[in-house]
Length: 166
Picture: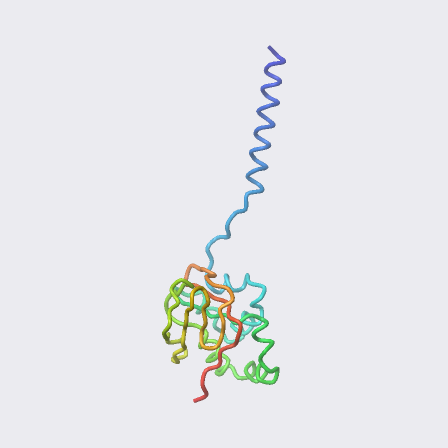
């Protein structure tokens, strides 16, 4: 009888360990985060995140929303002449205007894109277009859709959008 109890205890321990190790390897989805936190987790958006911080827009991206952010990738910023990017960095009002040209009210998922226009936070309108799964904003192609956050959504685009000079 002792041998049976020992075997039963051994099998129970093995099952318990196997069950716990299965739990440890199951990926846990990330906790819901704000747009600012969601964008900060994207390694291909380091330049955009730095400029958002510099322009003082991080609080807006942590706010209630909902907002849609069109975030240019680091490669998109590399295509901007260095002189222009430096000038933008030195002019906080212009930097904020350019970044707000990439943000608009409401939560527009990739599936919501249609041919039309949306009004950005800097007051200008931008054109959006859809052709099947191909999405564009002005002359930028949407490379990654639906970085969903608690207060909106972000999409990664391949160009820096520049508002018309007033």
